[in-house]
Image 1 (cartoon, helix red, strand yellow):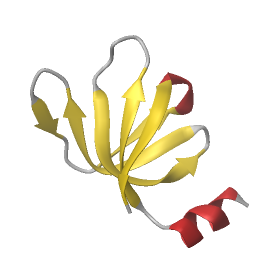
Image 2 (image 1 turned 60 degrees about the vertical axis):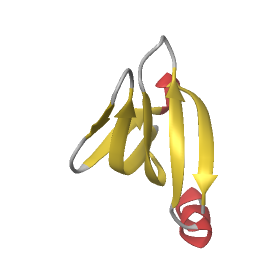
Image 3 (image 1 turned 90 degrees about the vertical axis):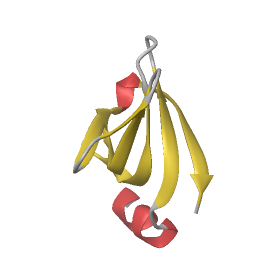
Image 4 (image 1 turned 180 degrees about the horizontal axis):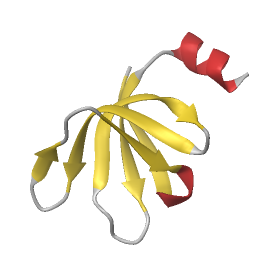
Amino acid sequence: MMRLVWRVRGKRRARLHLNNNQPSVEGILAGRWGGHYVVLTPTLLADGEMEVSGHVEVPSENVLLVQVLDK
């Protein structure tokens, strides 16, 4: 059911704020599967921005807040 919701809503630019003072992850939120948020074209936001190639999967228990930046 959730995969259908993600397909209808589409991918959007978002920032994942993480627990325990870990750097935030910003990119295109592709969805949430198997207890992980999947982010395409990710950028780690710490003291300086750092782009990461490919995609990242962030365990949902590490995510404090999902901030939607735009559609």
